[in-house]
Amino acid sequence: MAYIKVSGTKLVDHNGKEIILRGAGLGGWMNMENFISGYPGCEYQIRAALADVVGQEKSEFFFDKFLEYFFTDADAAFFKSLGLNCIRIPFNYRHFEDDLNPRVLKEEGFKHLDRVIDLCSKHGIYTILDLHTAPGGQNTDWHSDAGTHIAKFWEHKDFQDRAVWLWEELAKHYIGNTWIAGYNPLNEPTDPYHTRVIAFYDRVYTAIRTIDPHHAIFFDGNTFASDFSHFGDVNTRWENCAYAIHDYSLFGFPSSPEAYVGSETQRHRLRRSYEKKREWMDQRGLCVWNGEWGPVYARKEYEGDKMDAINEERYRVLQDQLSIYNKDRLSWSIWLYKDIGFQGMVYVSRETPYMKLFKDFLAKKHRLAVDAWGADDSQVRHVYQPIIDLIKQDVPAEFQNLYPWPVWKLSDRVGRLTRNILVSEYLVPEWAEHFRGKSEAELDEIAKSFSFDSCLHRDGLNKILTDNATLVAEQ
Image (cartoon, rainbow, N blue to C red; front, side, top):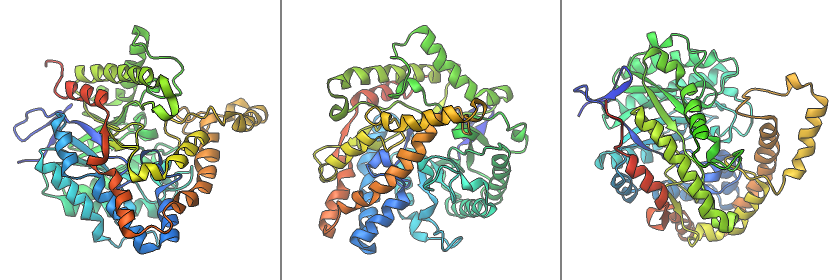
């Protein structure tokens, strides 16, 4: 078997035959996220808090079992049965080095990553390795695990040096593994100057290519994989590279300004948003990969009798996006494979020990809207609106749109700093306290809640994905 390569606008095999990658992201696994697994704040915060409550040894045991159960042979077999052929694997740099011991490789970081890559290859599934969290935080969101809204990665060269070092170690480890479709060096960068991201990509490209000249490289656009306007002609010095957009549509979220009915106007807006993200690549005949996309879904405990109607609407968004992708023969990775019931293809049953343990806490999290992703802030909006009004009143309008506007509106920024960072920080110890007094056997059962056998399937989503897994326009 040979490496997947980039040839013009396509991914191809060693014979030059086109390969279209269709799959999902394994979000919430080696890079945990609050809305995916139910904790507040950032991963580093809950890991530290749990160690304070149960001790370092038990804490490490729980998280290791969580990683073990989250993706097993049963998951890989199910994924393949849907006709999908690629999993994007997000990972946190902290698995491979410590901030207080930088550039010293933690070999144990490869334990679960190797295991899942091998499981996927056994079932004929490609993987793409995604550095989702870099030292200092490469973007302004919670999933860069920095605990702040400032992307310090761009302000300190040492953070960038460490990311380059890590990719050198990864390239050494995975050169020769042809089931890895490629490397995704940095998830969703947000460089407000738009130039430092290009300089970093030059560095990491050279570092990887010096060790591994074979694997394809997938570069995200700036501003959450949406903006290539400052990339210029970098493609002339980067070979075997594809370019990643993240094509989320507001129609697929609770904050959608209108119900999605699939009208001609709405479908035009879907297409136009997508086309703008890939415009730079299309002008140059380059390969595009949609590394993340997909709606979120209503839940009975929160949306009640409206759940089915809301989800049917979200499926219409999903199908109309896929119709666009099929016409363009686009490779994609939907977000995401597994969670606790908001977006995953499979999700943890409410009858599991984990979901029973955190039932009331999860309801509080939802009411307080402390997770950024798809938040419904209707129950607390009145608390934060005065802050928004104050800024609007006292700050001149031309200074109200701070980067990464327009992705973050003023209200989003207030929400990030107040709900998602400040309030969440106070909830972290409460989350950890649920584990107090638990034995290793009990911790194992709680972690096992994330196993495939403990999950339900989002059949409507999975059927649409299966129906579209091999559907493309004729060349």
